[in-house]
Image 1 (tube, one colour):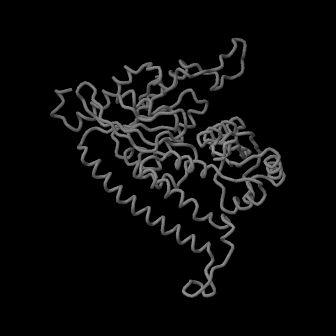
Image 2 (tube, one colour; image 1 turned 30 degrees about the vertical axis):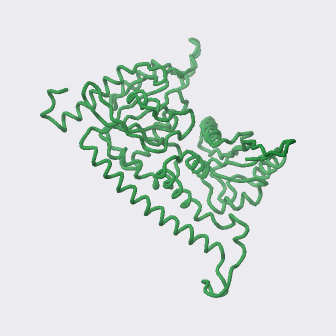
Image 3 (spheres, helix red, strand yellow; image 1 turned 180 degrees about the vertical axis):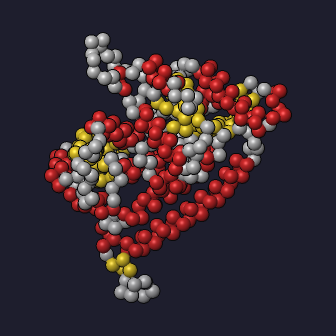
Length: 404
């Protein structure tokens, strides 16, 4: 935030958006188009954090350099560009180690952050409730603990005196580490108390069928939630619009069930966030049915689908029944092949009908193609969901079958 004064000496605050460059390494076995799509996602993350992307830098390497991530020449090129173009921040598309961060910062004329730090910053901006803020702060502290060295110049000084540890004095870095560790311990205790309260709340809901919306971030889960439950869950075309789990009671033809909307997943989701948001994800782990929402208009939707599947496995929810919902069919586009084009078709050449047939033919997971925004195919979605919930309910309460 920059403050300027007008002619009447009254202060006027003018919001100045940060300017950034993005940096990524393309591995030898990686498709350049995939690297471009990953950088598109990183740029969207930056935009969500109110950062404008000015330029992208990529370099093909077998593996990122363990010392400076990219090569020395590329690092010098990036530093020169940042100095000449008033760049505020350099964002790397991988999590940097503490030593990599220190080495890169020594060469850069501006701030350096990695993908993990950017996601943590977005979560910090988006957290609204005390519970979400506590979870995010815990993740931030665990991320910062090994990176305290060299973070502030005052940490180079020594502090001594009677009663301090270390004889002649204790370095301030050790003091700060102890403060952060104590803060982590305090936050974990706070989360345990909240977790117990939430566990009681979940137990008080009885044995109603529980359905949970899951999926990659920004695929339209909250929009679908609002449509089904007729509620007003916050929905926005930005990443991680929803952090807190929202639970609503829904009734289809006198059949009640609980529907929850949870935080979206993303590629390379920081492990610190998965750990600190474990209790939030309990809604997913304890659900009877998962509605896996997919943005079918995204060019890499199959990769996103696999990321969500792997994350569900990581949190212990990989064995849940799943209903696949391919959302945003109104935004789906493809490149139609010419009749005389004899080259093999690619996924960019698949029409929506081709895509439907290929997924329907798999028969291993029930699925539907719809548009939550345009309300296309919503009636069939409601009927399918009703049938699945009814089957679970009747298995749990066999003597109540006649009611439904």
